[in-house]
Image 1 (cartoon, rainbow, N blue to C red):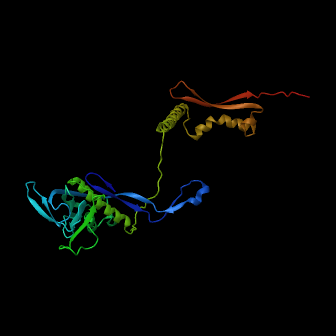
Image 2 (spheres, rainbow, N blue to C red; image 1 turned 45 degrees about the horizontal axis):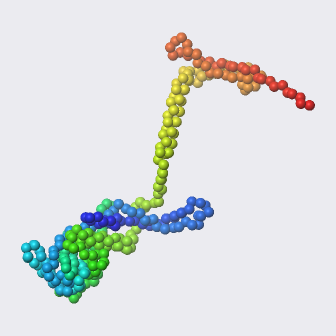
Image 3 (spheres, rainbow, N blue to C red; image 1 turned 60 degrees about the horizontal axis):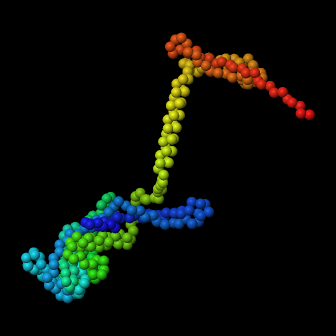
Length: 332
């Protein structure tokens, strides 16, 4: 529940229908400490309440001991008598509403009498509780009757008042020491915020206290949140990896561009490798190391550029190195 200078807002919550296992320890030794509970998440659905008030100074009966007071309505000495359903005494605020009257969908007119010895005030406010924002299905909506009840909740008793001349009149008294009975000294904005807070608090209690309703849809699950304390190190690592891949790619492209591959497919490649095959066939050993007969043998693939542009002479060249011999030393 949040409030600012103009309105109050309630944010709806959702609870997982199935229990969620919560492992607070990652070690295998603490697997028995896992807890099972419901996952509660905040939704994007909100409901707002607001109020608009007018105030008048009480010219007589402001000490709360009379059932009628006089208020100055025009500032020119014109007074109007207002009926007060209860004599609540001094230093209190009496909130009143007529349950048969409505100022619109989810709107109720609430009056407040701020009794005091020196500066009594009378207020009349229109309190409105709006519809649910971002609601996507009927179960998300709040009924108009509940919104109307919440708008006038600060003045409701919960039971009918049959002792009054008008049975539709409801009232509630709050001492000046209480949060909702604190004197506003004729401030329309403060009284409007006071009533809007009470209305949105009523919606919040209904949302939290009502029996939960299970609906089909995408259930919320637990996620992970990555926190990086040193972004400079992370950026350095990412840039280094990117540059290393770039250098490797450029080097590979340069090296691959210098390798000459004979045209003609496997047949052309077999012609280039024919000296190696002939060497193995003549030796009858099937291994280049054994065919060298004690001498180190190395075959090199060469591409020699010819006089014509783009023409290369491709061949395999054998390099033979005499094997170094080691003489033994008798230490006896």
